[in-house]
Image 1 (cartoon, protein in one colour):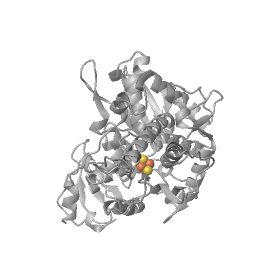
Image 2 (cartoon, helix red, strand yellow):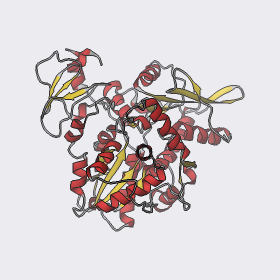
Image 3 (tube, protein in one colour):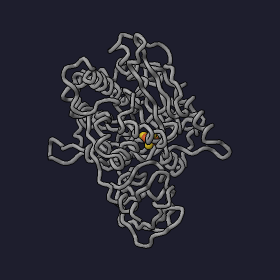
Image 4 (cartoon, protein in one colour):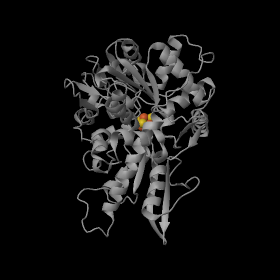
Length: 463
Ligand code: SF4
């Protein structure tokens, strides 16, 4: 951490949140006070709000969790059995982390968590692999539209920069782009919401109607691999107005990390090994009739993989069988895949994980030297399986070994399946959205990004 970020901070109230810089270590110093390591050089307290958070996952302590008033285990437990129908949406990365920790398969873990949550009064437990397929279908549609507009044979040239299209599912990256990079980068970012928000939109705008509930009668909680997802859920962009009384409704009311679910298991002294497995709720879950999990592979959602295959087929008639051949560019977290037609590269996609790699790529975009058509950008090295909210390695286990185990479990236990063929997704389009890219899809599944004034950053930099 750069020493220019050293500061003594005082927390004003529960809505305040310590703004981290990348990799900051924050040590609590008693109630309402915190210090950013390595040393304090400034004595005047600086007030920092939630909006100043760079959301880089470098700030993980239990203290911040409590500060995010509506985003805590206590708040979740408080809202149980209070008259609202509680829904939980579980991320596949969290499921894999818990499964590996307890020595179970991800499907067994899904069944046991269903038992656990339902015993607490939760109405249904869904799976964000399902909403990720919805995000992927819309992202494919958006990519083809951007690519076609950039085709040099088009008479009308694009007015705003359209390629490379950059994935939008990582809130760590989005906050960094909005707060540190600003307006030049934002048009490149896909307008499609992340799987966390598309499942929120589906539950509060469509599933509730099927269940004869109003959106305000639902309390929706997600379980995610990082703390940054709490920031994503609290964005104003992910609120809408209720038809009945104009109340502001949040798509996701609360986000719990994987580690907080482990805390819950410990808090209630639950012996997970002995717990029965309940049948999972299939309405928004990627589980087939034979009890197999299915979906796209890729530790962070398979965005590059899915869009590459789709674009190759739609734009160039090339059906790609088997795994894509990624070439390592700088390190294991920066890899690219290309499609050549008649000796010319027509598609160039990359996976770009970790702040070091993403800083290099945005510099290239800014200078107009980026040759990629699509970038799957994720803030965490190794992607979401390595998120800051995941369960830490066991004593004696290296972080690398844990990631390897998680990757094996995550992909090995899930049948590879095309999001366009997902029966749950087809049903959502049939019953609710119409077509990919429809007006209704744009209203519920798309969002915007906003440059944020760097109030605190500029203060810190002037020290
Ligand atoms: S890479 Fe994944 S886990 Fe890490 S901050 Fe982004 S969304 Fe969260």
